[in-house]
Length: 247
Image (tube, rainbow, N blue to C red; front, side, top):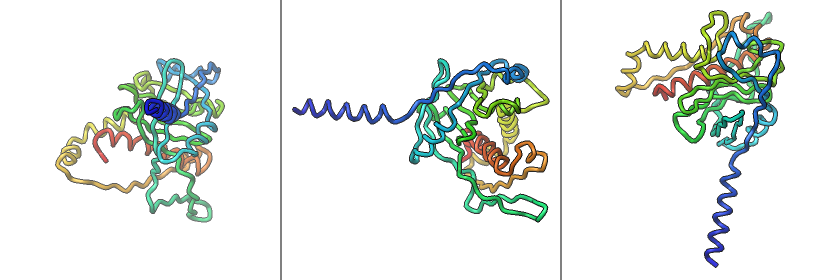
C-alpha cells in the first residue's frame, strides 16, 4: 500500500514540475524584408513571434515566470521576473507647445532572469503585446532579438531578427543592440579605479535621468513608444552592470 502511495506522490510531483512552463515555437521566416540584413550580420534568423500569446502568458504568471522558446534546433528555458526600471519617484515629462506635461505611466514590461537554470546565462527582455526584444546569454553565446522594423521600417510588426553578437559586422551607419552593449563594456573596462573601489566595499547609488530630443522622439512616433525604448535599453544595460559585479 505504501509503495502505491509513493508512486502516486512521485507521479503527482512529476506532473507538477513537468507542467511548470509552456513552450513557444518561433517560426523561421524567409521574407523580402530581411534582404538588407546581410550588410549588418554574417548570420541571422528572421522569425515570427507570437507576441499576444507570450504576453498573455507572462501577464497571467505570478512572481516567477517560466517558459521555453524553441527556434529550429535551439531551445531556451527561461526563468524570469518583472524588473521595473522606474523608481518610486519616477515621472515622465513631455515638453509641449503648452509647456511641460506629465505622461501617464505604462504597465511595466521589462524582465530579468536566466536561462537553462544557469546563473551565468543572463536574460534581459522587454515583453508585451507589441514587442519581444532584448538578449539571452546561453553558454557564452549572446543572442539578441530585435524587431525587424529596426532595420526595415516596412517590415510587419510580428517579425523579429535573432542573431549572435559575434556575427555583427562593423557598421558605421547603424548601431544594433549588440553594438550598444559592446561599447558599454569597453567603457567599464577603462574604469579600473571604479572597479577597484567597488572591491574595497564602498557602495554607490545612482539616480538616473534620461532625455530624448525631438529627433529621437520622431523615430518612434509617440512619447509612449519612446519611453518604452528607453526602458528597454536601461534594462539591458543594467544586466551588463550586474554581470560586472554591480548590484
